Length: 334
Image 1 (cartoon, rainbow, N blue to C red):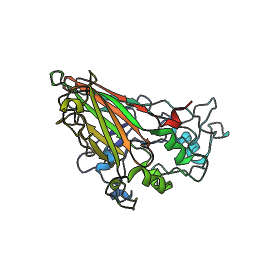
Image 2 (image 1 turned 30 degrees about the horizontal axis):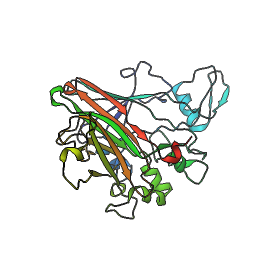
Image 3 (image 1 turned 180 degrees about the horizontal axis):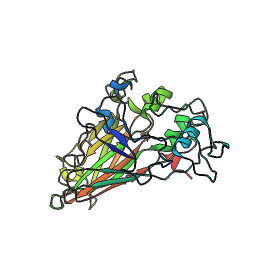
Image 4 (image 1 turned 90 degrees about the horizontal axis):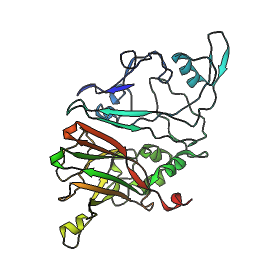
């Protein structure tokens, strides 16, 4: 599947088909569709979803069922199995769905069409058994968004625990002679679900030390404090470099589910984004590593995924890596 920007006044469009993938009838993207514009407030989605919101973010896939028979299902049969729990094979046999396996294989590639076509690839993050609630079928056109239900075993609390980290780490290289740039992606993928299923925990995560409201419907008003420790390749810190006291560690407020952070004092983002946060300041350092850590009422633990984007030669060479991390003490104990 390929997600393409639809232009300045139109939503992004999801494509599949023989012109995009080798198998037009692949069961991994069931149904007979070839393109679907993503929904926004002008098409019946939530009033807060704008056209721009369809162009950057992340995707969640929830596996509903599986089929382990010998006969290969068509796309329409696969869709019927997922939504209704059963389907009829070509010979008239009715077969029922089984539980989806706790397995996933997938990767995402972000392609920038300018600057020598840098490609940023990353693997999917998979979680199992986050809820035992019965999943409701949602039509392909999408009339609602399923939320994790914390009133059953698992749910949002279990998912947050599995995602919890207290710090993220990344290398950075912003040497001008190499045409190098580094950006960070810090994603809080359960922010919306936590606000709906567990408001008390949500307020502990996102409201500490920030101007906000008690109304969780405007999620951008709820932020989390992040701080940065910056080192060069000789383990020198900005505190040592500036050589005056007191030194205040740089802080930032990350208020979106997806936060895009350029590294460097005046660095321009590698990718265009309306969600760009303040730059991480590096002083005169142009090569080294940094730590991103969180401050909230839960001892700094946040359900978070981080990625480091890097380019050299003004985009001719590129990579995207998941950031290393610290786990909360309880989670880190064998």
